[in-house]
Image (tube, rainbow, N blue to C red; front, top):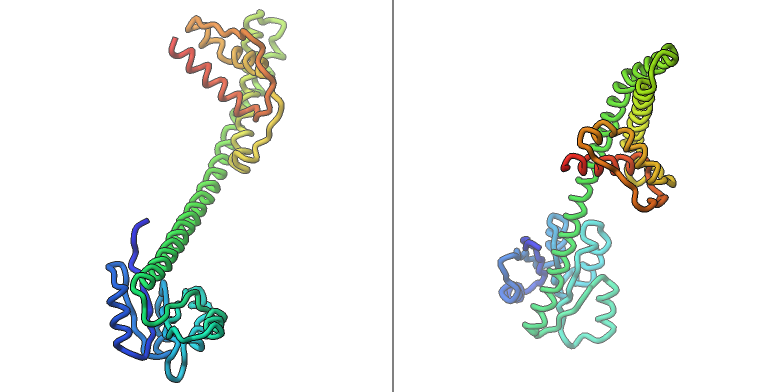
Length: 283
C-alpha cells in the first residue's frame, strides 16, 4: 500500500510539550498541527482530516474531556481516534471518563518513547488502511458506473441489430416457404433438402437474434437454462456444417452417448459449433 501524507493534531497548552511530542513522532509521511487550547483544536479539526488527535487532558477553560465530547458529537470529526495524554496519578474513574468521552487510548506522563511511538504507529496504519479501502471502494463504484453504462450501450446495440436483422431474415424465411410450397412437386430430393437446410438455418438465426437481445437485456447470470441432449446438438450442428465437413472430408463420430445437461441451449450450441469448426479448420 502506497504511503500517504497524514495529518496529526497535537493539543496541549504547554508549547514545550508540543515540541517534544512532535520530535518524538516525526516521520516523512506525517504533518503535525498544534493547538494550545480547545477552541484552536476545534477550528483545526473542522478544516482538516486528521488521522489522529493526541490530546492533553489538563487544559484551562476547556479540558480534554470537554473537547473530546464536542469532537465526537460532530459528523466530520466523530471518527477521528483520540489519544489522551495525562499524568499517571489519574485514577481508574478518570480513565473511564476519558473512554466515555471518546478516547481510544491513553498515554501517561512521563511518556515512554517506545510505547508512544508504537501506539501512534498503530493508529496511523489503521487510518491508511481505511483510506486505502475507501479509495478501492470509490474505484469500484466508478467501475460499476462504467459497467452499467456499457450494459446500456450493449442493450441498445443489441436492440438495433436484432431489429435490422429480423426484416431480411423474415423475407428469407417467407420466400423459402413460398419456394417450397410452389415447387415441392417439381424439385428433386437434394433441392428439397437444401431448402430444408436453409429453413432450419433461418430458424436458428432467429433464435440467435432473440438470444442476443435477451442476453444484452438481462446479462449472463439470468440467462434461461434447460435440459439439453448433447447428442441432438451434435446432429444439428453436423447438418448445419455439412458443406464445410464435406469440403474438408471430415468425419464427426459420437463414440459414446453424450450426456443431457442443464445449460443455456443457444450458448452451448454456439460453443459446440465453434469447437467443431475449429477442429475442421485444422485438418
